[in-house]
Image (tube, rainbow, N blue to C red; front, side, top):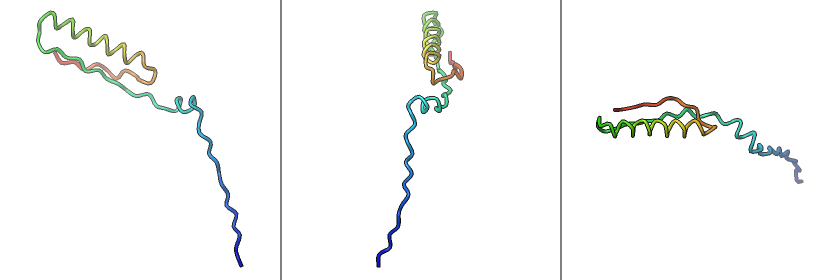
Length: 72
């Protein structure tokens, strides 16, 4: 005598891409900028680094600015 058992299968559909993207938490991102000496030429390099990383972080919708850490 054989026993017949029926199994219930539950299908969980994948979330659409937009719903998945909305559920992703923003990452807090910080920039680290530094110069190795105090020459005037290096000071503009420091400012260029800060500007570059600030723009990069602010343009990415998945990132939020956590701050700029600097060493001069």
